[in-house]
Length: 269
Image (cartoon, rainbow, N blue to C red; front, side):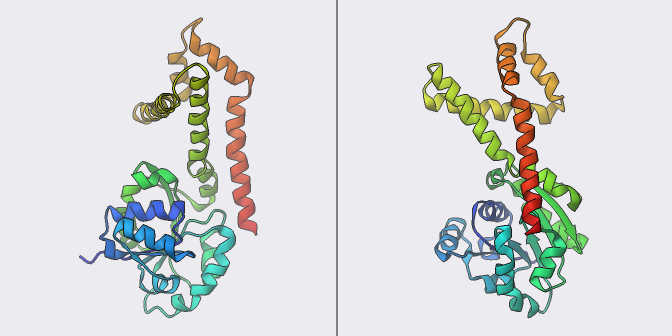
């Protein structure tokens, strides 16, 4: 069975993460990489054993074309490849990862009525530990199965309705930044208490990894997991008290809401 060609326009953090995930399932010659700065595409192509091309070639030769540019740059990029897309003998599947832009908006900007998959990845997808949120329109069952098979190396693939993807991505897509800040803050606290920086960071990161794994494996409510660590009159409950006094949970909620509202704003521009 012939393997599909996956083309990536945009080799930033998200595009690189998904290209790296696809490379686990596809041979290098089936991955085409294009970027506004060609050297960036060539560097990633060398790392993955893939092929660096320009945008038009990616648009002409890909079975799945990943549009990995910022929302505000999407219209200009698509106008540049519209002729190549319209000149294809058969449609490709357009895969958009632009926050706030609907699948219909992508079709209109591209000037073609092609099937579309909308994804919101996160950076841990590069090591197979990520979340790839997906929704699709006009994509056949066979094409969708091929896509999911090739992208399984990204981690968890979650299919949701398009109306939910912006809210979900405010957690999974923006969340790695929030989690990294928590790791850094916990490590800073450890350093303040006398730990070497490298040890403090390792302990904080491993703790977060283990807690997340425990939550996923057991399905336990986070509140119950917190209670299990808080002994009466113990150290942990005093730390929890300090976090609550400073609005820890409220700050986390506001971060997700702020990210969601910004995503909606990007889609209106």
